[in-house]
Amino acid sequence: MEKIVVENFSLTYSDGAESLQNINLKINEHTITALIGPAGGGKSTFLRAMNRLNDLADVAALSGHLYINGQDVLDPKTNVIQLRRTVGIVFARPLPLPLTIYENVSFGLQAAGERRKAVLDEAVERALRQAQLWDEVYDRLGDSAFAISGGQQQRLCIARVLALQPEIILLDEPTSALDPISTAKIETSLLELKEKYTIVIAPHNIQQAARIADDVAFFLQGEVVEFAPAEKIFTTPKDRRTLDYVQGRFG
Amino acid sequence: MSHLFEMVKRFKLYPRQVEWLGFRALAVGSVLTITPIFMVVIYILVQGGPAISWGFLTQMPQNGMREGGILPALVGTLYLTLGTAIFSVPLGIGAAIYLSEYSSDSSLTRIIRLAIINLAGIPSVVYGLFGLGLFVIFLNFGTSILAASLTLSIMTLPVIISTTEEALRAVPQSFRVVAISLGATRWQAIRRVVLPQALPGILTGVILGLERAAGETAPILFTGAAFFLPRLPQSPMDATMALPYHLFVISTQVPGMPIRIQYGTVLVLLTFVLGMNIVATVIRSRARARRQW
Ligand SMILES: Nc1ncnc2c1ncn2[C@@H]1O[C@H](COP(=O)(O)OP(=O)(O)OP(=O)(O)O)[C@@H](O)[C@H]1O
Ligand SMILES: [Mg+2]
Image: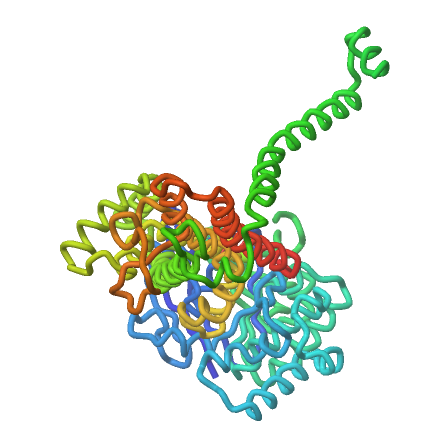
């Protein structure tokens, strides 16, 4: 089933450069889609558009459609708070909130008005287990989230998103600040998580895309040059520029 | 010393020697700066110390203020500080939150900021006259704790607003983005994440602002301060004695005033103000030590 449908989507920041031009994509439910491409291609911009986090940035113009579950999220009438609970995002650097581990994971639910301790407890444990972090922190949920390692912090950030039981998880180079072991743990959880969620990731390198992605979109200077199943992109891409990029000839 | 002469004779200093000299010079400068402060504090302690007693703090002045205590002035200053806090703290913090978290950089906010900067530069006697015109006469509050507190509030607001804004700006933008990305509203992000982080800085600003209010004479001179009152103020509409004004009165207006009582009063006022300052410093350094970002 098509979860995300993007039609003729363009975005311009107020500095004038068109950062996304005429994007067309169809992302299926329960898949991992990787957005690859050289720096400045518009991957982060596209990710942040999907949960309207770009509202906080200096966006000058938007056009086209970005359907999630059939609803155009660019519609001014969209309930963005609800949207962000449905479409969670994990950033490149681990960014714990200056709260305890428990409060970090329950933050979204509490913001949504959940007060019942039992419900929060249950959600925190489930999310931490899904993010493969429970065993490492169950006995210090009351500690500051800064007291755990960078890799653990990043899994905490994933747990924080999972606690809201979203439908889509966006990850913007989530392992770029992590060591290989932490990276492998996160990749393993993503492969498990795609059974339940739809995942869109800007991987931190092409190898990561090859390891986990079902579909790959190649972003180049604000355009999607090619969007196809991963094995096709990595073996027989249609576009010469895609081939050059995946073979490491530029970028 | 001969070492130093050697260096000067050769007239060529190595970087390490330059550094040595530089640090010594800075150390001398620092000592010179703090010496007067220590001298003032010690002098006041020596002169005023003997006047301090439980009775001095808890008795009404007697015999034309030449004897007895300073209770009404002390209580009055507490009331004025509290009154100032009631008006200026919520208003100042609210304004700062609006300016730094909600408003975009429009010409309106630029005018507001300009006004705040200028407010901070106005001599305090001007606030006194303004308070007299607006609160005492126009709003008909009379010379009262209310009018004086409002006047002091206006004077304190720029300090509270600018320090609060600074404290809010010191909280990384990423915390707001993360909170909002988790479905928080702007206000939830501010209340649950930003404000707790900024709180020590805000408290410091509040205390520094109130401390200034507690020590000022000119703004309360025409708006709420009384020369002498035989009893403590009973309501916010009463005038009140206050430490800084009382000090002025007993230093210049009362012949035959024992110097001991004057210095005792100075010591109490200084303790009050320095005490607030120390509290602010402790809050700030504790928060710095605990901060993890
Ligand atoms: N907040 C912003 N304001 C103005 N321009 C921006 C902003 N964010 C991104 N841009 C511009 O938009 C273009 C796309 O940037 P984006 O960060 O989306 O690229 P990216 O593909 O994620 O790059 P990277 O691989 O370096 O993360 C760039 O030219 C960038 O300069
Ligand atoms: Mg990026």
